[in-house]
Image (cartoon, rainbow, N blue to C red):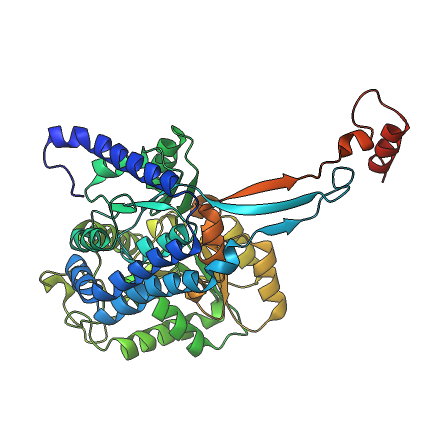
Length: 486
C-alpha cells in the first residue's frame, strides 16, 4: 500500500492501517490456531515469491544504493531470506510440539499434568531498515509465519525501489488479511508504529528506536528492537595478523560497512599497529583493485549518509588524527557521478571526543586504537555502551575467556566477524542500547508466540487431600512442613 500523496490522504493513513490490522486479526481469529500445514503453505508461498522476484529485487537494490553488487544482493538479502524460511519450514513441527513440565507437590498428586503450548500472538508488525532491505523483512517474517501470525510490514523509505517490489511480491503471494506492506516516509512510519499490534519488531537506529518504543507503549505492544552500536574488534598478540585482517576488512567493506554487525573499531597491540595498517591496505587491494568503477564495491546509500561519514573523516583530520584512505588505484572520489562511494578509510588513534568513536559508524571508516596490556581492552569496552557484537582474534584461551565472560554484547565471534548472524540455530539480538529481545530460528518462533501454561487435574480434589481447604488439619501441617524447610 502506497504512502499518501497529500495531507488529506496522510490524515487517513493510520485509519487504513487500523482497518488492515482489524481485518488481519479477524481473519486470524476466524482461522483459529493455524495448522502446521497452513503455516508451511504460507512459508512455501514466501519462498516461491522470493525466488520469482529475486532478479527484480536485486535490480531494485542496486538502483536504491546507486551501486550494490548482484553477488551481495543474492548472498545476503536473497540467500539470507531463503535460508531463514527453509530453516523454519524444516523445524516447524518440532517447534510446535507442546513442552511437558513437571507438576509439583502437592498439586501434582494423582495424575496432574503441566505443559506449555505455543500459540500465535495474532498480528506482527515488522519495520525494516534500508541496509538489508529484503532479508530484514523476511528473516523476522519467517519466525512470525512459523508461529502462525498475520504480518504487516513497513519497509524503509531510503530504498523506495526495493520497497515497491516488496509490496508487489507480498501482494502477489498473500491476501491482505495474511500480509500487507505499507510504503512511505517518516509519517507513515509513525502511524505504523502507533498501531495496536500483538508484537512489533524494529530494526534500525537507536535514536529512532526510542520513538518506536514510546509509540508502542501507548498500546502496550511488546517490542523486539534490533539496533547496533559500536562493535569492538580485539586483535591479540597471539593472532595471525594477515588472516585476521583479511576477515576484518571483508566484514568492514561488505555492503561498504553499512551493517549493524560490522567491526566498528579495532583494539590492537601497540607494536602491531603498522603491521595491521599494512595488512589492511593489502587486503583491500586484493578484494578491490579499483573502487569507483567497480560494480562489486557498494556505494553509501545516499547523500545524507555520505555527508555524515565524510564529516567524521574531516573532523578527525582537523583534530590531527592519522587518516589513511585505502585507494589502491589512486582514484579521484571527488569526481564520481551518480554514486556515493567512500574508500575504506583507517583513522589511527583518534581521541575519544571525535564522532568516529562516539557514533555508530555504519560505513567504510575504521578507527584503530592501541593497547599495551590486554586488560586495557576489557576496561575500554566496558566503559562504552553495550554493543551488538564483539570480536576476538587470537589463540590465547585466557584472553578469549576474559572477553567472553567480562564483557557484554549481543553476540560474539572468535576469529571471525559477522558470521554468527548466519547461524539460524543461534538467537540474534542486542542488549541494552544495542537492542531488546532476539529472534532467528527457534528463538524467532518463540518471540512471535505466546507460551501458554496449561495445567490439568483429575477428578480428585487434591487441594482437600493436601489440607489446603478449611478447616485446616494434620494434613495441612504435613503439607506446610514439606514446603517450609531447607
